[in-house]
Structure formats: structure tokens, C-alpha cells
Length: 414
Image (cartoon, rainbow, N blue to C red):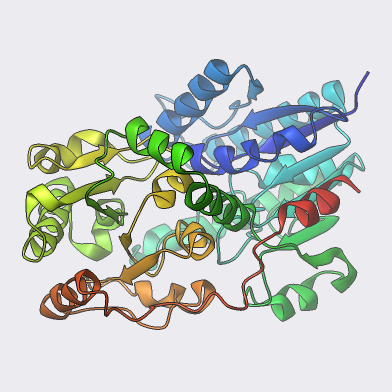
């Protein structure tokens, strides 16, 4: 019988990232996805359902573990969240005792995966963090923290709730979930830009490895395949109903409506915003000389982009981004999205835009971006320069490791 690996994906995009690595492990290990979702509205439940459907379609082994993580019709302050906390902990403990995995792998050690990882550590299971997107990979609290804009009462309630949980843990001689972070056996970071020193100060430096991004290599290999194999490239155009005689511009929209409390954009404004970007592009390209493609986020809703589809735009959700990039001439994206790792690997021309008040430019160093455009007229001029063959490269991938999968597989499996 093969030893078991459990993978904890946060949502469908992370699941698909780990899916790319499955062929390297399935002979040696039995791999299952464990789906956990927290109780902050319908969104997480939909994410769980989407991941479950995908696993069923692909024939992947998966488990749903949501005891203590669902909303209840009656909520008593302090009592209900603490009761549900222990229900969830007991469910995680029972599950792990039953399945006994040799490894538990996730992309971030944070809510809602914190308790599962701490319970795995308690049993001596090897816990591994494999970074998928830039930014922090650790978060010690099992409870959702109030936002910076939360009221004083909400902040006081949250602090008191944590203190109550710690007191109960201490009295029971149990793991103090809210005062101790996950201590993963291994941490795999994408590159040296991920604040390695911060992790080394908190964890054993020997546990940290720089392993790269599988997305970069996948995009790199596929782009080279498309450039060297005319029939393969032709089939990609056919797969996505694109005309190989036209220029292909790919737009990867940032989900401002998911950050409406900061961006001020709801679904209608999201649609209008990206419709405006399309019109900016069409100020340079006529409809008959252009394949204009919008690849939306795996968790986004296609109905939001119906007005763009009505304009003759190809709106894709479940497409493989690396395949679309392989036949893309110009990519319009933002400086924050994880999709930029694939842009780096594909070596495609890109323009990075941010016409919002959000500080998306914080992602620039991680994706080796040289410039972000904040002015629409400048954006139109850059599209025009691209059409003329005069657009300079907007990122520098000369130092990026293009072949990381072997290193990642060795890191996870050793």
C-alpha cells in the first residue's frame, strides 16, 4: 500500500497548481485533496463545491472536512465560536488519526488550514509549505481577524475571544492554537525576493529552500513548444476559437469587485472598468485585425463579463492560462496577480496597468516588473507602440529560474 499525501488547497486555482505536480507523485504516493472552508459567507462554500466538482470530474481522491466551520442559525457570543472551534479540532484529529498521512502539503499555513496543520504536527506528520503566490505564507490565528476598519467593539470582542480560547487550551493542557504558529517541517519559497530572512528569523533556516515556481516552467516549456511546432500552435488557436492571422491580445482582469470595500467597485463597476480597457485597446486595433481574449480568475463569475462578450470578446474562465499565453502576442495585466509568474515564463510582451486606488504596485519586485502604467492615454500609446513593434520590454526575467519542477519534486518528496 502506498503512503498517503494530503494536499490542502485554498481554492480551485491552488488545486490546479498542485494538480500539475501529481504525475510526479502518483506512482510513489496515494494523493488526496482535503477541502476545508471557513464560515465567512457563501463564497467559501462555493469554492468548496467548485473544488469538489473538479475533483470528481478528474477522478481525484478528495475529502470535505467542514465540521465546526459552518454558520449556525443561533449564535451565542463566545460560546458558539469556541464550541465550533473544538468541533473542528476534534474532526481534524479524528480524520488524521484515521488516515495517517506521511505528508500534509499546502501553499499557506493560515486560516482555515491552521488547525489541521497543527494537529498533523502533533501526530508527527511532515508538514510542508510550498509557496504558490508571493506574500506571506504564515498566519497563526484560527479565528478571522477583524479588518483595520472594524469598530472598537468588534476588535475588543476578537481579542477577548482569543484570550478565552488560550485560557481553555492552557487548562486542558492542549495545543495553544491562538498563540503558537504552525512550525512546518519544510518551507519552499519561490525565490530570494520572498523575504527569506523574515522566515529564517522565525523558523529553522535549514527548513527553508528556494525551489522556484512550477508555473514559470510550464509556461516556458509550452511557449517554446508552440514556437517550434506549427501544428501544435495551430491546434491551440483552434481550441480557443482564435484566428491565427490576427494579433492576439490577452487581458487578465484584476477582481476589483472582490475588494469593493477598498476599490469602491462592485460587479457593475468591474464590468464597466474592463469594458473601458477594451475600448482603449480598440482605439489602436480594429476589430477585424484582433483576437481579444479575457481570461478571468478561476473564482470569478462569467456573468459579470457578459457585456464584454457582447462586444465580441473571447471570455475564458476554465482555459489553461499557459496555453493562451503560448499564442498571445501582448498581455494586459496588473502588477499584483499570481498569473504574472506565467507571464515571466512565457516571455510574452506585457503591459502592467493599475487605474485604481489600490496599491497593486507592491507586487512589482516579485514579478521583476520595471514599470506600471497609471494613465489611460499612456496606456493607449504603449499599445500603439506595440503594434508598431517599438514597445520595450516591461519586465526583466533574465535572472528568473525557468526550470523548477525537478527541484520542487525533490523538495516535496525527499
